[in-house]
Image (cartoon, rainbow, N blue to C red; front, side, top):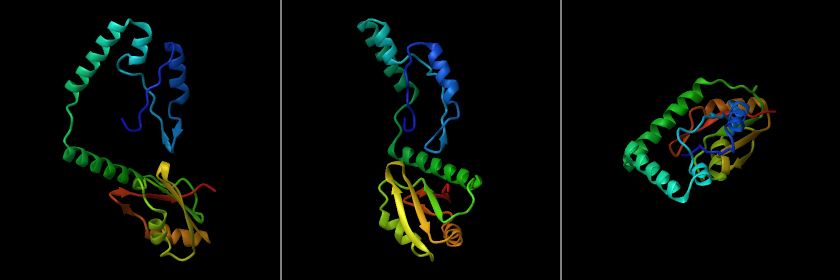
Length: 175
């Protein structure tokens, strides 16, 4: 359920309006996919039905959840995650930078808990390095150099960087 959220509206008209308004809206650099749920939410059933009907709804939902998707083993989960990261890395390489080169690099898909010192160690190997700034909550970072040319060299040299099984996407930051 990572990267997903469910929002309950009072009526269908409001939900349709929100869906249209936020379709392809960017959130954390990615377009949102807004869809209607496949079944009624617990919140809706609880609000509109009796307690007994709510318990029955919840029981059926949990039963269907188990039948549809048996719990994966740890190895299967790791394998799926690695495949997803590889696909993500391929998409990142295929997409082109939308920002023109400048002295600040933008890092995405950093591994959780990455230390600023680790990134400084990597990027300070290239001339003109000034600093690394992290937004660890979003797994983003910025690397600043004295000139555009120095940042270009660092970006080219670190293309394909993988940290803790996370392919890091490196582009130029917005000016």
